[in-house]
Image (cartoon, rainbow, N blue to C red; front, side, top):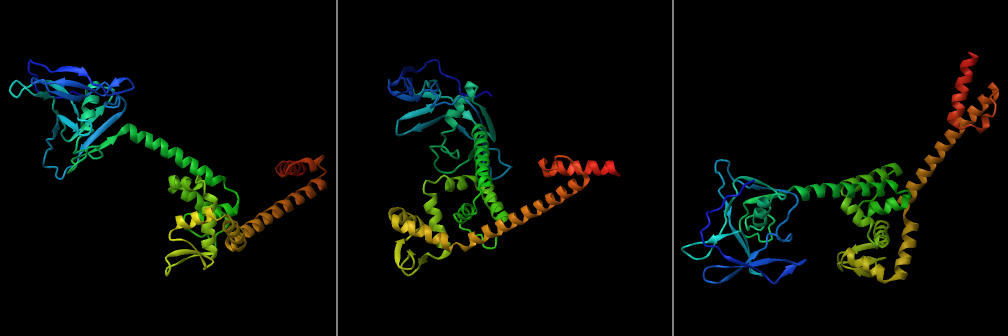
Length: 342
């Protein structure tokens, strides 16, 4: 991509390195105009000033397709450091001031930061006050930015996050743990089967992986779970009159959930009591676990009955060593022997 700039005057500004450095590289250079006044101009060789990797696109936020945007920029000033982001282009013969290269933007522009001209122009444009997200954004915004490299990193990061959240959700085994996690998102699995509960946990992990992992990785997750379980079984309730969460309708815990959880953290005897009593009163979790166990036992009995019947058939047929075979192997052996006898 080429840049457009005004013609430089024959006279040029003098340039010396500034004192402020990062990783040994000057953050700016001092450029003198014809009057001898020194201007701090950002050093485009410093990677903090001028990025050299990635692809960035800017797009004009247009109110009407009938009007062709005609924006341009030459400099941006950091007033705190008194640094000018721009490309000196000689000295203006009339004003004796530094002349700056001007960049015209148009409707859409794409910057490949491996290209020096693109990288330098983007170092200035990215700090424009009319660019959405600029550190110097001020007033009306006319351009929005699409950082392709950042977008790609976000996609990869989100994918890893979602995959980890899904792995955590799918690896949960204990009914109590799944019930606690579901309640931590403000839900209560009344009437759920174990399968339904697991499915809902996986849905939350897929829908909100960042929030899911924030709860899962929280160092105080156990205390948070105890608090939410106590809310569910009625040991903790919110009293509007006192604008506070109350333990057993008698002991104030705090005005917010965060304050109530901190109360439990700071009061170990109450925390231990809350843990034991809430587990004892958690009939929803117990019912899901009981029904799940009954179903599993029924399935095992059904499988065992089938296997017993196969063993009986194998004995009648006269198969050798049939008791050492698995159910699948035994079924194949019985089927094969039956075909031979037909």
